[in-house]
Image (tube, rainbow, N blue to C red):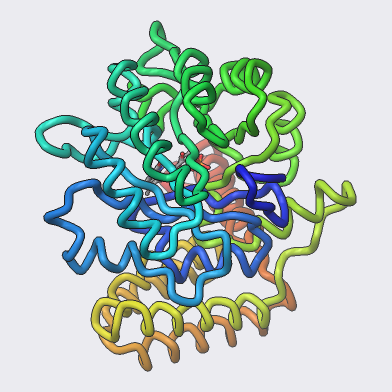
Length: 362
Ligand SMILES: Cc1cc2nc3c(=O)[nH]c(=O)nc-3n(C[C@H](O)[C@H](O)[C@H](O)COP(=O)(O)O)c2cc1C
């Protein structure tokens, strides 16, 4: 799998997610089997490039290649300058955001809103390609299926982008109007794939090895991109890879492995953000890691009140010590089974009033 001249180790990509796919998370995903990970979007507004948030997003020290930076904006010249700025800071691939409901930039909505203005979208693509090509940096485009159900213009934009020199297109199988509601559809992704010569990546609702296999088969896409399902379960990449390679399921990570990966992730976090912000930002990741595990609720309540990295690390240690007593591997089903069980007791108790005529859960 290539993006332009850049070879990738596999076709499993981590989706760009603002507030999630920071450098530590991208490193983690790549360590656990993602062949490619795109940065959180970087604004095209020059006045924000020196802000702490944007300068962190443009920091790729020690990141495993290829380094891919997503840029967001509404002005072709500013987007071209943003491409050059990020290339000068290590970007090897520039991705244009037309897939995410990005914030207003210069009084216009950026990201997927651009799909409503095809001439502007194309002007941006051409300007970014013109700025990046002389630096030997491929440009990719991430978009949705269209603006709304009656305006699915992904195919038209993808064709124009290919003609303008874009090296890969990613399509999230929802319209902008849908936000994250409903289900992703893959017919539009398949139509884009069938029409283009450049690689096409399918995205949206891929949350298991079977779904990955099905989306690849249904769309004929060259690659798949996983976003939300990797939150708290970054090992999904190696699980999907193993399944696609062998047809068999990789066992869930051992408790010891998960603990080691999470502690490594935390270390990276504290080093990247510093103590105070590092502890605060790590809370959401710890919440995701433990969401469906036994004792996860109590752990999250505890961790949300901790302010020091040493306390956070100790809490993670205690949580995984307890898990290790219950089994060798992570068992997400244990919690799901407990919930189902509690639900069936609840339903049963409503149907079968206790002696004395009172329902248990009434
Ligand atoms: C918290 C969050 C932040 C996101 N930020 C971006 C972004 O900065 N750029 C972008 O193109 N897409 C962004 N997305 C969209 C994802 O890249 C992806 O297209 C979407 O989540 C669908 O994939 P999934 O079902 O695998 O999560 C974001 C999604 C989430 C949940």
